[in-house]
Amino acid sequence: MKSLKIIILASLAFIFSCTGSKKSVQSKDDGKIEVIILQVNDVYEIAPLEAGKVGGMARLAELRNQLLAENPNILTVLAGDFLNPSVIATLPFDDKEKIKGRHMVDVMNHTGIDLVCFGNHEFDIKEHELQQRINESQFQWISTNVFHKTEEGVQPFYKMKDGVKENIPKTWTWEVTDTDGTKMKIGFFTACIDSNPKDWVVYEYAIPKAFDAYRQLTNETDVVLGLTHLDIEDDMELAEMTPEAPLIMGGHDHDNMIHKVDNVVITKADANAKSAYVHRIKHNTKNGKTTLSHKLVALNENIELDTEVSKVVKKWTDLADEKFEALGFNPNDILIEVDEPLDGREKSVRNKQTNLGHLVTEAMSEAFEDKNDCSIVNSGSIRLDDQLSGTISQLDIIRALPYGGKIAKVEMTGKLLKKVLDEGLSKKGKGAYLQWDKIEHNKQSNSWTVNNVPLNPEKEYAVIVSEYLLLGIDIKSLSRESEGIIKITESDNDDPNNPLNDVRTAIVQYVKSR
Ligand SMILES: [Zn+2]
Image (cartoon, rainbow, N blue to C red; front, side, top):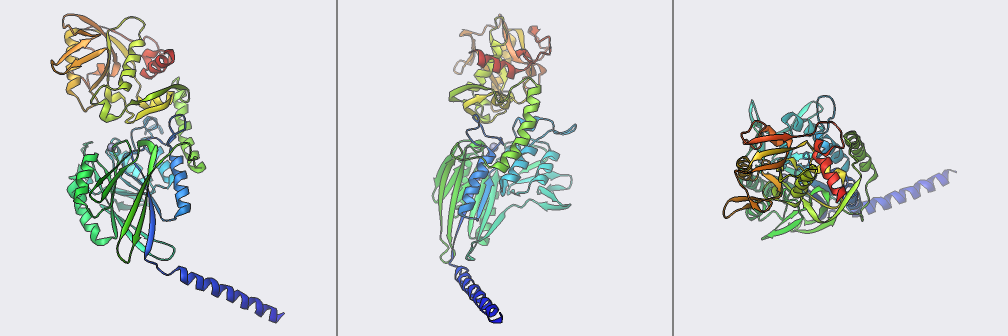
């Protein structure tokens, strides 16, 4: 018995020594390390779009699972713009607060997002709401050029974690070790566009600040990468100044792109996780050489939805569906298939007439049974900041116009109509810029036509407007008391099926009737 025990122990020792020696061979640092960075940007929607076929955080999570099986050294980054806008964000959370990005942070925590930078839309929500979202987040934030203006002066934004205040750093370094012990440090700097001024936010010059951070990181790390939220032109300018940073992962532009400035590659994925960039980075610690590859992966039906993340997403979408149903909508009702995407991007709707703006105003005209001359809506009521493509549901219309709002017929003088249209045009780039139907502006002569006839200041016009415009906030020359208003006709009931009570109902009914 004793000898058997010895034999077993001896053979065990042999096994251990074998695995031990194997391990020591494995743990020899070969000087080569490979990591994966999974990049998305501008994600406003937690659920898949286009009748479930495209995007969705659960699909991103599944892609991450697949990459994780290939290489455990993966970092998932989101290059800004995620807390707003979305229709879910506008819904009440409790009696005091609205959801305001809570749903997104919850889903991002479950998706395995590791690192984010600020985008302009992070400052859409109130100061205390942003603080709450940062505190709820389980991922790392960095901010090279955007700071918090407080009574005590300009300070970094911070996260409160277990009662401890953790400042959001200007740079962040990912320290990675692979299975054989090769180590690498990847440093990140950021740069955020200053397009969303708030009295509690300080934007320092993005490019010089990013350059300073880049210079510091080149001394401290093996590879330096950018995570930015800028217009592509600014990314390219930045890239010229950061020749040793092989990759800038950007956001803000909502369509996928890849550019090269000398040796610096700039990538952006499609908004709303319709696609993601997979960057594979190989580094040789012996000669300091780094090679990268970049692959844009479409997040479509070829990728399943991660079950766990889907559950978290469903928790929030169920809540939203319930609220929309109470308003008389059927969010999952499919309305149309479009060949050409409907353009609701902020940079489009606030600067030029788009097909989505036209659909909205045409539906407003049609909501009135009797004749009218034209219709106008403030572009700021379109909060999608994305395009609607493929299959369009009632939810997409709600997403496009999260605030809804009543519509009215305003009989007014041509003189007032001209004033209103001129003012709308002067608000290019802002939410007060108007989208219209049956109106045209001639740039050369700076004149207007209504129904192909020159606008006559002496004539009377029946104009369909969003009732919001009658508050005189966006277009100062238009309010219920404006000189030139003859008559205002609006809904006289609370019927949720009355298109005059909600512009979204008007659109749904119009699309169904076509
Ligand atoms: Zn942006």
